[in-house]
Image (cartoon, rainbow, N blue to C red; front, side, top):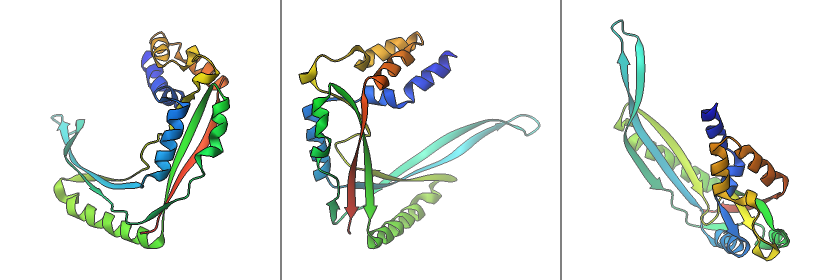
Amino acid sequence: MYIINAIVSCCNDACSYLCNTLGIKELFADIELGIAAAPWVNHHIECFHYDIKRDEEGNEIDRTKVVTSTHDEEFHVDQWVDQSPPASTVDYLDKLLLSRLNIKEIINYSPATMHRLRASQNEFIEKWKNSDHDYEFEWQEDIPHTKEFTLVYNDKKGSKPWYANLFAVIFLDLVMFGWFQRYYLEKNTFEVKYKLVKYIIN
């Protein structure tokens, strides 16, 4: 039961918000930096095999994944435009003491760029896929300077509430009462959504 509680405590949105708390000025500065930043696209591959142990009758009793190498290659972005709404669309956060900001990062591609991306992916996979018996490929995207979950604190509106304290939830999770703080956080704050949108032309 304790292990289940620990897993649930770490794998939820409330915990992600508490781990990334920003002041209102810092938040808007980061959004402006995100709007100005170029999108990042990366190819990542992990090459591996499994060490399998068997009993005397040949039945598998244990399987261990052994990663032998990882490789990365950044996809070059020549030309892009930002299509995000201005940061002022969420300026009402300045009126709130505490709020949960959910930033969704979206990267769209022109048909020509998507064709170039697929060709680049195939070439990258062909280059490394035979480095070991198995491989896993991952297409990574990011827009710098922002995170998906941000707890926004406005010190002009008062002191930070107890339920916005990361160390408090860590302590309460140790005694299996972290749910109480997460309940108060969600009950007493608004969740605001914002989109960072990039369009890669070439």
